[in-house]
Structure formats: structure tokens, C-alpha cells
Image (cartoon, rainbow, N blue to C red; front, side, top):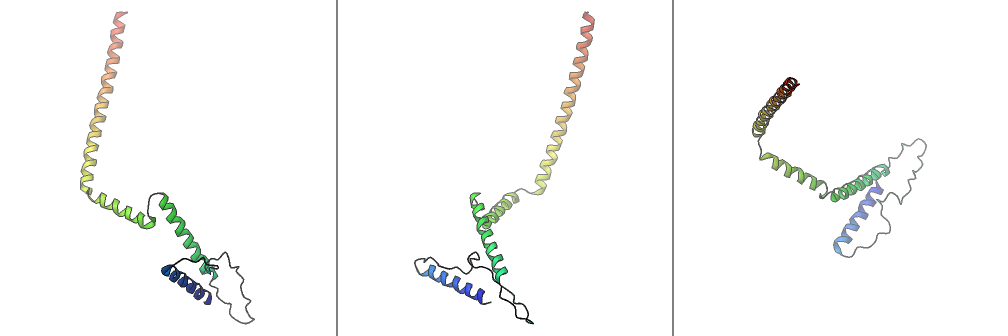
Length: 144
């Protein structure tokens, strides 16, 4: 637990330094897990094994790195991170709300009716073409 407490103290000191003035370069960041080798302390015989905070800190660091990378990628796509994505989803929802489902159903029905009429006209044109071809064949026989 003292490692977590030390890390939190260090973060608090950095936050205060950032709030009050120039930003000194930290010489050691306790949350940067790359700088600290994981060396488990030997467990005395008969004692319960100590639970290490190292895996938790590693997971927290991985989540933080993932969040930063996700924010960067979304920025490349023109979004302001996850909040920008949610804002875009809200905007899309508001835009879709102006068209009701019954209106869409009516439009779909109208389009289906028009499509059926076009298919019927297409069938009529095919029949007319077949009749014309047949008649041209008959008149061609009479000329021979």
C-alpha cells in the first residue's frame, strides 16, 4: 500500500507544482512502471504471501496509455475524444428525431408502389419489344 500512497503523493506534488508555476522535469515518476523492475520480496516461511500493487499499477498505466492513444486517434478523425464521439451521436439522434417512423413508413410504401409501377412498365416494354421482333420476322418472310 505504501507504493500506491507514494505514487499518489508524487502525483499530488506534480499537480500543485503545475498549478503554482513552472513545470519542473520530474526525475522519477513512481507510476512509470518501465523505470522500476518488479522484484517480489521473499515471503517468510509460514507467512501469507504479500499482495503486490504492481499488477494494479501496470493495469492502470495500460488503461491510461490506451485512453491517450484513443484520444489521439479520434482527434485525427476530427473528434474531441470519446466526448466528441458522444456529442456526434447526440447530434445524429437529434437529426433523426425530426423524421418520424410513420413518415418513413409512408415514404417506403410510396417508393414500393412506384417501384412496382416501374417494373410493370418494364414488363410492358419487353412485351412490346417481343411483339415488334415477331412482326418484323413475319414481314421479312413475306418479302422473300
